Amino acid sequence: MPRRVFFSFHYDADNWRASQVRNIGAVDGNPAASDNDWESVTRGGDAAIKRWIAGQMYGRTCAVVLIGANTANRKWINFEISESWNQGLGVVGIHVHRLKDRNQQQSAKGLNPFDYVSFTKSGAALSSVIPTHDPPFWDSRDVYGHIGANIADWIEEAVALRAVY
Image (cartoon, rainbow, N blue to C red; front, side, top):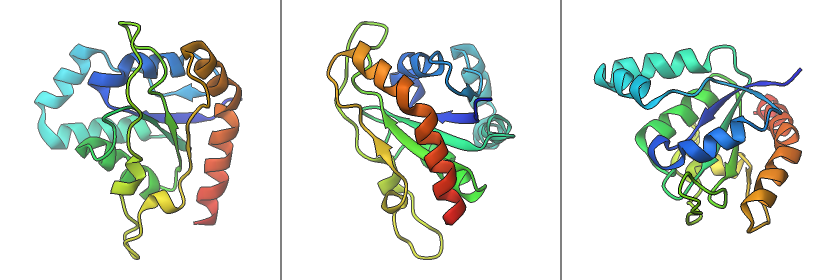
């Protein structure tokens, strides 16, 4: 049975790439929000966004942060990473910049979003313990295949790692 995961990503820039990863089928991910759904949530302000994120995380064992060109240090990405870690979820990052978007374009590699979120007690960046994976291919199909072949293992490793911390 696939793990139930929460996907975190920069919606405007990477929703197309995120949907590709979701369609791999190796994991059971949170349902995608449509543009209209997300606009409705955001109209409710920060409290509504936090409630929506909490609902999306409920019952998940791992958060998969899909890292695009502009994912790092975004308010809600940082919040999702912090909440995932604080709730005891495994957390892993996957660079998706070489997956093509709806316009058949790749993007630049983004910075590590875990550099911008710290452990509460020590202040050390979560990047010191959370792994990120950057598929070693340039062709979008090869990147997709690599993610598909490895995502379940990466998630299991993240869950096991979280049990240690």
